[in-house]
Length: 336
Image 1 (cartoon, rainbow, N blue to C red):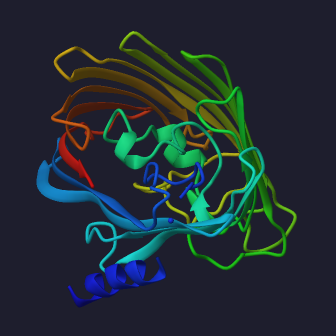
Image 2: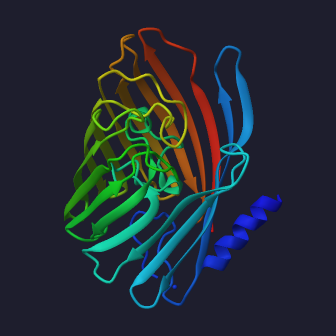
């Protein structure tokens, strides 16, 4: 408990605001410091053999952001969930020069600028969990580096271009070279976003020659209560086996070439009830031929702008051998 209070005190001490798009704290006031955060309390029932169930925290985060006169802003977030780590730790921490909306520069620790699902805030996901394809092929989800970015959800074009360590969250670079990661999104009409991402990196601890290339395409369509999301990712080359599976889960043994994606469909009713369906698929490309085809059936209920209940049934179908890994998860989230 003492460590948690120390983290919160430090966040308050280092803390005014136009914060870069890679943050998930929403818009901040120009009047000064903004503290923010969210809690995701959930119940999980896993249909394994034997079955298991538990109450958990998926995430418990607190942060601060603000503006330093006249052209700099900051963003700091800590993860407090004991189910993720026994000790609180720094998650995001970056400084942004943001005088020009179309050419801002961020330096520090932030999300890897690849893909729609990766860069959707955890408190804004339509399903409780991200797709297997994103979790397995985008890792590291967070990294140290510098990023040039411009635009936002209202401009015709927005972009992010990062020069990253490639070693993962708060890690010293594991080799002498840097990863290049980028994303561009076009917004030609109010209801449509189309984008693409790429990464070229050096994931090996052993040398600076083994490379990794990742390419992705994305689509987001919102019209009269309907939301359609889609993404496809292709990935090849070496990978860092110490990174884990994105922001959660374990990394699957990957082959030389792997691919996958997802499609999500949701409809917001007038009663603040939102049925959701996601189909996601993943081909590991490894020697065993391991693949996944998963379906998530869910419903979201919004009590207000800050409080949401999500209920998901996740049906997971693995091949060549199906494993009992289906799950029911109920999550109550509050933002502040």
